[in-house]
Length: 384
Image (cartoon, rainbow, N blue to C red):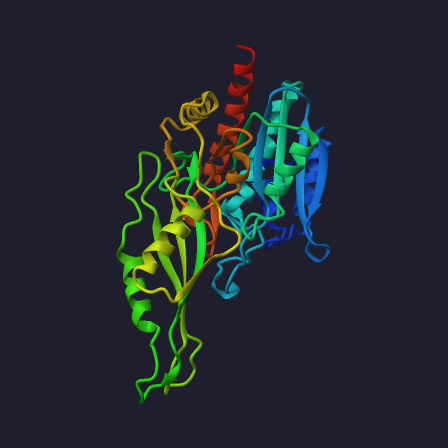
């Protein structure tokens, strides 16, 4: 059988077999590029970043007119201890109604569903424009992936009208959630200074004392109570360190690292100013640094006509209404939302990044059906 006549499970399995640990494509994007070329798409392999580690991306499109874009990533997180896996993580093993492998839900299953939904739709609708934006730099720094492709598209004067990311989204059962936004994420390093000295004497200033007061504030103080579309912002301490390896010295500084997941009541820089003013009430002897790579919160208007059509598509397949949510971590939607409305809809979020990551094949089939149904509805709306 021709490799281009691949079925849904076969394609998901094939994509899983590429060991594309972030930020490497490991041949996966090149395989998708070849597949889409065969299906009549015009494709662009786009490489960005330093020569020693260039990031591979793909933008592909077919036809002209209103542009429905499917977006996603082939890169996956590391597998951890291989001995704990039921099957090798890049084997794409089918076991009953389950397909195992790293990236099964996050998000090679989603990629397979969107590629074949577009292929099958365009067989009978070969004038509508469908595109794909696929990167190998989502799970990592995300500097030379979707962000760079969006800049390239802008330079070329190419636009999209609506974008669907195939990220894992459902929490309890297929179709229970539709991601319409994400919280922002900011990482900080706080250094609290004292004066180093021998523990037996009093000629020192212990930085732990103000640091403990700051920790109480960071852990207990409420940043906000959230709003209709976002939960309350949340701060988590990720490490505390003095670099002190002996027992008879009071250290000169304490370093605290923390992450804030924040809603649209803040920006990363407004959070830094807020935190700085709070810390100043405890001690003037500190430095607060916002680390590079922060992401801002974003949200798509739930009343957008295409969002409403997508919700209808989900309900027609599942019989249930998907609840709009901004739950979870960051995504590449933040790089797209200023260009066009973007939603995320995919497989089980609770299986992502886990040992024995797997997808439910019946869910994968439903995902294909939702994407295909939305293609019908999106382009039908263009003629009205």
